[in-house]
Image (cartoon, rainbow, N blue to C red; front, side, top):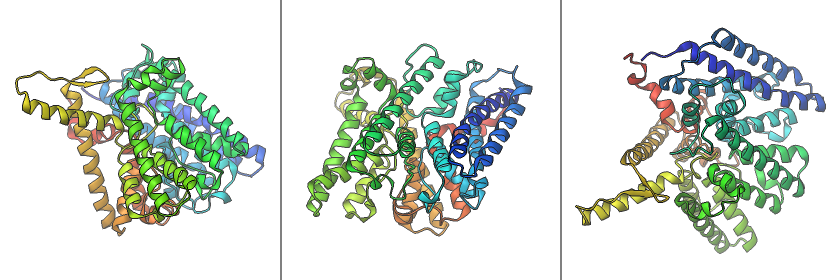
Length: 481
């Protein structure tokens, strides 16, 4: 089975055309603010749309998109939107090299939140809004957005949806994938508006409220302030905690809750595990901070904030957690490998995989005692096929293997152990700040250009759930049969 290049180019053209529309936002802000950067956005918008049209127009009659084409479309799509999305950073002089611009853009679209900007507050509002907007677009996925708003797609919709959306299983909210994608974007946008309004109530200006609503709902972590959410009031920090929690919850569950089916939350095994991890970890962090001399209010707020931020792969900070005691740093590093629920905007391994692995392990214990019994693996009262558990195990092993190999490569590049571990975990898990020289009070600016490209690739691999990218590196993908 051969690839269908013209069909692939047709979809990639649509993706670029979709991306070009979003440059209107920083363009308008630049014109209103009169910051002199509007030409950068206008030029990028025209260039992106032009390339998109060149790819789409000659191939618009081609719709033979097959399963193997899907993987190439999604990976190339994310790379292309990052290549064009990086241009405004260079044209506006925000960064000095395209390498830094590409790193910042990939970090944005993958909702990682790792940054090379050393003086965020010195940047114009238009570029900071573009920075936040890349995370908001990437949170739900530009391919999913395209499926929702462009009915011309028509082919391969569910495959594209599954290849890009995070999680083990995607809950279809409607029979047609376009309707499912549209509902997810409506829920996503509605919660973004609610977050914006509550941040306004908390005293943020319109610009800061918009930017942080974008990046909070995306589990992104980009902020308009150098000290992140630590620059704002305790009320704002609690609002951010709430929406970090919500956006890392399965969107099918959120939709069920919004339509009155609240019982769905307590009947969901993954949600119960998700709540347990956050509550227990927050309690331990707060207790340790309190015993170390923090006031009860500060201990609860900072402990809960950092646990939820890291566990949901958002990456906001309320304080420099690398100054905490080693047990707390270890807890946060461990949470970098957790993630929120499947079917959400969060990154990392995700709760559902741990639930299935633990249930599978306990089931093996029972099988050793009752060797002749037929004992199915059940999740949410549904029997799970062994193939699903096999895929979960393969993902877990591959994630850890990629992490270990990445740490080794970073060590070879000259980074110390702590920084290498922090950078690998933070980029592969789409978290942002790590530990060592890439901690919350540091940036990735000092890293070598080659290291930045390597970490950018880790962000994309992590965002696309490993196999969507890694399958392109196998001979099976390229073999004709």
